[in-house]
Length: 149
Image (cartoon, rainbow, N blue to C red; front, top):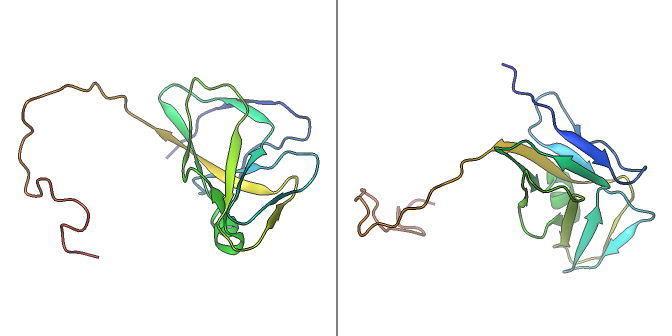
């Protein structure tokens, strides 16, 4: 199954690195920090990390920025907004807002992998207001309503 497509990107800084996949079947491409020197993200704070690249994501596709599991689990650094959304009409620099969830200050080095981006198709909804919604077995039951963990 061939599930590849081309995404044009532009280096905004000569030190910027091309996003890379860690393995043949990895869903997310690693994004790299592009900066002059290491930065320290204090415990409980957020810092914007430059990647030095901009992209032309195809229409109908979104770039979703997720935490790298190693960085999140070992250092406590993860995107502040949990999942970043890069729309297909955005042409600015891709930045990662990294939040330090740990109890200590953490240093991020130039060239360090700081997040991963997954390309995903999406649908655009045409919202229609109605007076009633069709019933389902679940109905309006929300948080914890199924009684399952």
